[in-house]
Image 1 (spheres, rainbow, N blue to C red):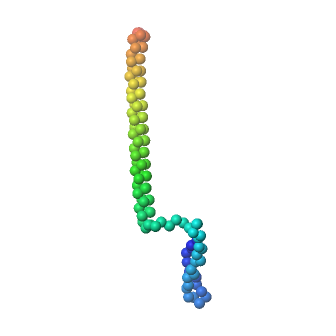
Image 2 (cartoon, rainbow, N blue to C red):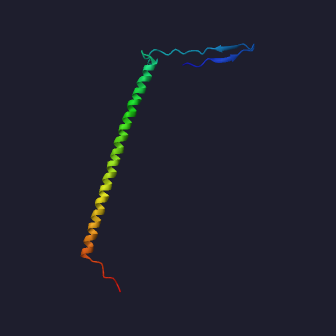
Image 3 (cartoon, rainbow, N blue to C red):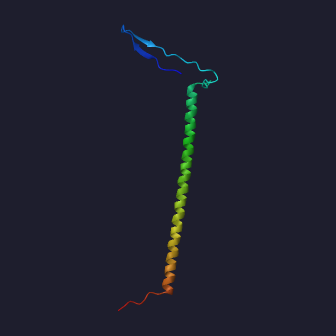
Length: 103
């Protein structure tokens, strides 16, 4: 466990720094230390993030086009229903003509 050095003032007004005490971590508990430069880890994380963002963009596009296709299908169904309604009304008017106008 590491802590920051602390700044103290002695009674004689001479500042001094007190070094923190370091606790030795047993080797079986020590964090994994990579045998490569830290920027390589950062580069890998950035690359992974870029890949994930591309995946999300593809998923978003798929969902968008899926939703668009769904909406197009609904519009086709509504158009078909309108057409069927008009045909049915024309048939009903032919079978049941409107009453003659009242004088």
